[in-house]
Length: 342
Ligand SMILES: NC(=O)c1ccc[n+]([C@@H]2O[C@H](COP(=O)([O-])OP(=O)(O)OC[C@H]3O[C@@H](n4cnc5c(N)ncnc54)[C@H](OP(=O)(O)O)[C@@H]3O)[C@@H](O)[C@H]2O)c1
Image 1 (cartoon, rainbow, N blue to C red):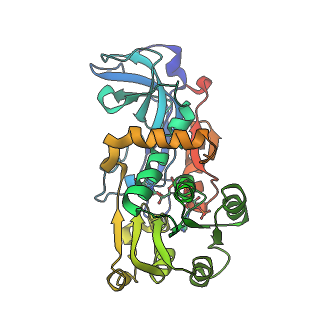
Image 2 (image 1 turned 90 degrees about the vertical axis):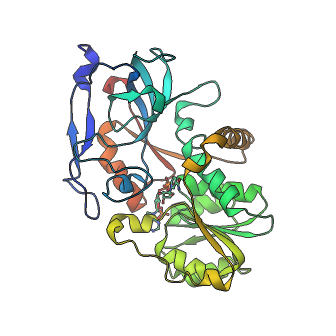
Image 3 (image 1 turned 60 degrees about the horizontal axis):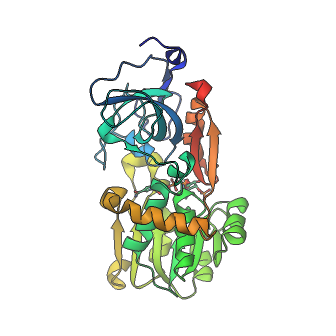
C-alpha cells in the first residue's frame, strides 16, 4: 500500500519482558508501514486506546487468561478504530469497530475478532469506558459475583479508578453502605463529595485496619478487590458471615508479578463461611447488552457518572502505563489518537 497514511504509521512493540516495573528496555517505538489486508482482515486507524492494569500481565511470560505478547510484537491494547481498508464481508471503509486494535496508529485486525459499533447509542469514548468493558466488569463483578443486598456493607479498593468508581455507584443504587478505599486527597474527596459514598479511606494516610474498622462498623459483606496485598488481608479480618470477596484485580502485586503474595488471612473464609471468587468478562460476553442497557440508563439519569482521564497521542503510551501504578490517573485511562497522527 502506498498512501499518505503510511507516512506516519507508528507502533509500540514489546522489546523485552520486564522483570518488575516496566523500564526503558520494555517498549520500542517503530514506524513500519502496514501491510495490505488479506482476506478476512481490515486495516484500521485507531482513534482511542484503553490503557489497563491488566496489560502488565500480558507482558509476563506466565499462564493467564490470554497468551502473553511476544517480544517484537505490537503491544496488545483494546481500542476503538475506524476502518480505512476492508477485505472482509460486512465491513466498509468508515465503519467504527472495537476490539484488540493494538498500541499503534494503523494496523491490521481480523474482522472476526472485532465488533462494529453503533454510535447512535454511545460515543466512541464511552464504548471504551463506562459503556464498554470497564462498565461491564463493574456491573457483572459486583452484581453477579458480589451479590450485594440492600443494607449490606460493600468495600471497594481502587475505588476512584475506572472500574472501582462504577462499582461504588452501582452499590449505592442497590441500597448498600459503600466504603471506598483510594490514595490521596483528590480521590477521597471525589468519592465523598461527587459520588456520595458513605465513608472513604485514604490508604496512603494511615493504617488500613483501624480505618476499615471505623468505616465499616457492622463488618464487611462484600469486598470488591482491585488491589490484593495488605488491603485484602485487612479486609479478610473484618468480613461478616457469608461475605463475598470479588477478585477483580490485584494491582499491588502486578509489578512483582513473578512473586505474587497470596492473602495471609484467607483462613477467615473458613471461620466466616465466606467465598472469594475471581472472574473476567470472558464469563459474561453473552450478557453484554444487559450491562450496556443498565449502565446507559443509570448514566442518562445521572445516577452513574463516568470519569475519564484522557491523554493525547500514541507517544503518551509509556507515560500512561506508568500512571496506573503511581495512581496518577483520575478515572478511566484512555489515549486519544488525533487523525493527523495516523
Ligand atoms: N477481572 C477483570 O475482568 C478486570 C477487568 C478490568 C480491570 N480489572 C482489574 O481492576 C483493577 C482496576 O483496574 P482499572 O482499569 O479500573 O484501573 P484504575 O483503577 O483506573 O487504575 C489503577 C489504580 O490502582 C491504584 N493502585 C495502583 N497501585 C496500587 C497499589 N500498590 N495499592 C493500591 N492501589 C493501587 C491506583 O489508585 P490509587 O491512587 O487509589 O492508589 C490507580 O489509579 C485492576 O487490578 C485491573 O487489573 C479486572
